[in-house]
Image 1 (cartoon, one colour):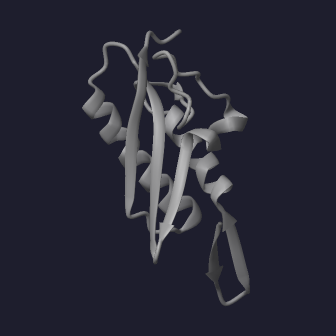
Image 2 (image 1 turned 90 degrees about the vertical axis):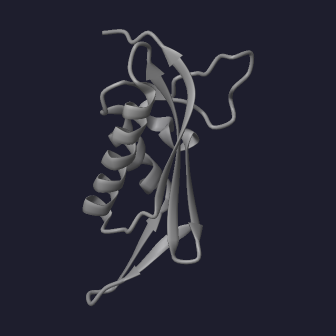
Length: 120
């Protein structure tokens, strides 16, 4: 699935993997985030932290009619206020995608997959 943009100069196709990679890179730069987690890997209460090349496994990009929705599965740092971290990630991801790709994002949903002590 991809997004088609028609401009005066031609047509631009943006795949969901590109959107997921940009969203994942933005999310892990936010304070309080240990890393991205796979959307389907919660077993025995352990969530694996994804590497940079696998961010798309922890992000779901949904397109419903003309609306674009992003679901992020993250692991937060122990001792941080989860609601503040989630709010910060939502606003940063939405802003970055709107500025970088020129897309209108309708929602950014955060799913906390675990809490870990960050390695500083």
